[in-house]
Amino acid sequence: MKKGCVYGLSLCLGLALTGCSSFSPAVSGISIDKKGAVQEFVRESFDQSYYDKGELEEELDAQIKSYNDSAGAKAVKKQSFRVKDGYAQLRMTYAGTKNYAEFNHLDFYAGDIQGAVQAGYAFEGKFAQVSDGQVQEALVWGSAIMTGKNYQTVALRQAMLVEVPGTIKYVSENVKVTGKSTAVVEENETAYILYE
Image: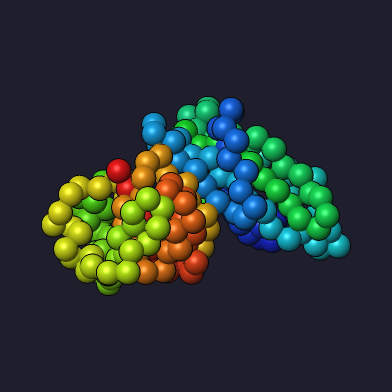
């Protein structure tokens, strides 16, 4: 099997799960806890005629070891990897959001609005206000949000489920709110989830 294919699938399958959490969504997603640790669960179709589970897992283990050798022995951990009914499921834990972003080579930010702006996120376009897990009809411009309260923010460019350690207050228009602390980014373009 080609190494590039193994690497590509393992990146798609990047997933974190902290030891005692019950984060098990039906789709690929991440959960961020109050200390910044990330749990990831990835579920992807798996063609066993093209991919070899053992070889893929070996490559993933090698990537984890290589990353941990430079970032710290416990920065990234594989919790489980299995193939069942044509799907590969991977669970991993990341010590922090920076480890998650670096290991998976993702454009990803977690912190407050001021830090997001300093990191180059522009908060362009319209945002929906969220109250009690429900999106409100009125939209506000991102520029108005930037000058208000310094909310905690997740900014990313990957379609996935995101669970935050607080109550969602605003989301960009390309985000679907699914609960008080959960939302789904529907496209691979910059999306924002603001919470407190």
